[in-house]
Image (cartoon, rainbow, N blue to C red; front, top):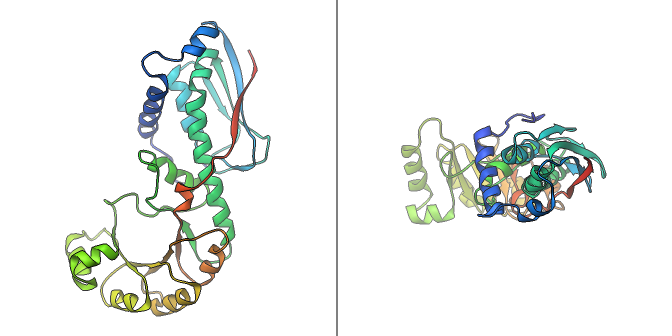
Length: 288
């Protein structure tokens, strides 16, 4: 498998399961009837993945796994590494082996590679936009069902960081939790009693009064939801380093720099995973 240039690769078992499901969806009960009908059984080919647009690559190991799942005789050579910036027309990887396997695995390999590279590319744009500030760009749970691990990996490839992976690994008390619990105080008290000592607690607040109420209790972070930059600066001053500050809500490439300069620690951006366009990559046969 291809090694990443940043911390935190995807476990092979996770890759294998997703690739198997994607291939099963594509092949149905009859397989690749176009390739089986037109390509000789013993034909071999070499193909190159090329970038049709500049961007950041992520998902090479998943692309390799797609071909390997179809036919383990396919050889795969990564010419760059996950996290690398590539130029338009750059060769990203080569694959060689049975032509039928290359054609059958092509779309699944490209679907993962293009989608993940698109997320990595958009993430890098946000990371670059806040360069020189203290803010880190993080993702959210607004991910494609079944692909969260892959999309969060792609965020890391782009230089971002991950928010919680799911409902199971951190407590985030939002406005509806507070209403259902009967207020900020009982919500935080119940969360602290329920959580183990390793579980972080974050509270969402929408104004400075809610922030003051939350800071009266033992919490680890505050999510400053949909605050304008002036209020964000006031919120950061109120917190005074006691807990982590996270800005969230409607963040764009046009606004992220000003948000970062307000002094927050984290900026969560749902668009990284729910709105990133693919990075256009193609697979072209270059010889037998």
